[in-house]
Length: 108
Ligand SMILES: Cc1cc2nc3c(=O)[nH]c(=O)nc-3n(C[C@H](O)[C@H](O)[C@H](O)COP(=O)(O)OP(=O)(O)OC[C@H]3O[C@@H](n4cnc5c(N)ncnc54)[C@H](O)[C@@H]3O)c2cc1C
Image (cartoon, rainbow, N blue to C red; front, side, top):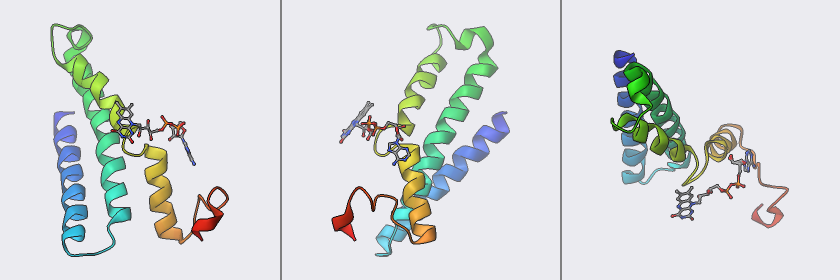
C-alpha cells in the first residue's frame, strides 16, 4: 500500500508540474490543470483512506493525526471545482463540446 501511495503521489505531482509548465510556455493548460486537480484530489482521498487503514483502530481516534488527514482530504474534491466539473472540462476539451451550452447559450 505504501508503495502504491508513494507512486500515486508522484504521479499527481508530475501532472501538476506538467500543467504549470504548459502555462509557463503560454499554452492552453485548462484540460491539463483539470487533469491534475481531479487526479491529485481523488488520489489524496485514496491515500488518506489507506493511511487510516494501515493504522487500524488507531487511525480512527484523535490521538493520531491520520484521522484529521482523512477528513481534510475530503474537501479537496469539492472546492476550486468539484471532480465532476473537472471531468466536464476535460471531456469538453477532448470532444470539442460544451456541456454548459444549454445553461449558457450566450457563451457560444
Ligand atoms: C471549505 C470550502 C472552501 C471554499 N472556498 C471557496 C473560495 O475560497 N472561493 C469560492 O469561490 N468558493 C469556495 N468554496 C465553494 C466551492 O467552490 C463550492 O462548494 C463548489 O464550487 C461546489 O459548489 P456547490 O457547493 O454549490 O455544489 P453544487 O454546484 O450544488 O454541486 C453539488 C454536486 O453536484 C455536482 N454537479 C454540479 N453540476 C454538475 C454537472 N453539470 N455535472 C455533474 N455534476 C455536477 C457537483 O460536482 C457536486 O458534487 C468553498 C467550499 C468549501 C467546502
